[in-house]
Image (cartoon, rainbow over all chains, first blue to last red; front, top):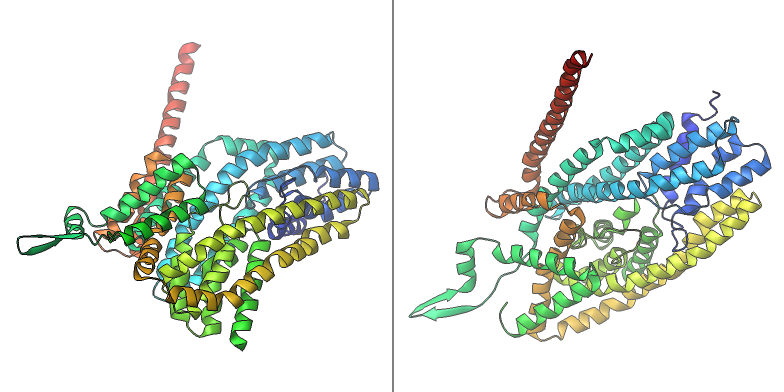
Length: 267
Length: 266
């Protein structure tokens, strides 16, 4: 088979995608325009014929939405299929669209978990570096952006190489799950540590027994330090689990409760 | 006074660029409070307070992920406005979070508007594709989306910083003590949201105990987050490798039994 796609072409498509993916996100077609924009120079190269080129452009204006880095997998597969098609092999246009559409759901699921897990690992370290006022955490956090770019680039190259069958095999063999579990575990330990030093709540309730003044907080501390912050986190957890993650509303509620508790001189 | 104008302009630009969403791994950093804190630290000559505030706000908004592209709250507007305003009025990081909160809610509406307007550019893309006008597609993706964002976001952040500083200063200095106390208590509680959201997003109940390990390592043993990472990373790698080994062993065993069984079948 004739290969027309060079590594440089792949990199160009991937870069065009990675930098623009969220720029034109709309309710009607999500990330679609960026996909078409990313593929455009390569499609021109593959299809010198104007009609075929037009079809190809329109093919990539069909609804697309997934996690930006993991979309590299869709790009790689799309490029491989477009190349086959332009070489005169029997690849119907609908097949290219439907493979892309079939991949985007599962990839969004994995991709969102990976991206938020990366946040849970990188941000705690950046915050720990900067929490005494040094700007070094701000520089450190850019390593996450570089890592995400590189991850997507590897996906693009790899999936172009193995094509759609290779990707289907990879997604079904369970190794992704193992890695994701490991990353989530690490993320949770880091978040726990961060929670311990950053969620603050103590009560000012006190009473006198005979001549000794006692505070409720001292009692809590003798049971378990950090009891109130821990309870708060889990209370918020169960509230949002039940009522949905409408952060704005929940935050307003917290502020009102805190004001009321302060008025009653409990905190 | 000159400084105030400059900072208001910078706030407008950081908000515009951060929420224009350039570069899949780049915009989440630009719109988060660390960036605005760093810039304000440079411009206002108060790096230490700025970064402490930036860390605190980052943490509070950390759990917020974009699921399906819908912003549950706009961390971009919150950080672009709250950090310069709180620094200029000498507020605590906890108070900065209280100032940030309403803006994070207002910003959601701006983002909804942006995504509705972007719908027009998609329709335009269809037309450009029909006419094979690749420059038109590029214009839709880059230029028109930038202009949309600039018009929606720049004036919002600019005005809030430029006119909001004095208002915030006046309001916060004239509040009764119990209100100020209530706000600063809320500032200590609000980071709980980031953590609760993270737990919800991870969604694997069997992993929740690890959260407690991290919590008590810091609370009871006094280890800093970086020290915790130093122990946690090798631990997680060891456990994962062991898991993989176990799976592989099972696989090998399975292969062994099948090869052993084959001659019997014959």
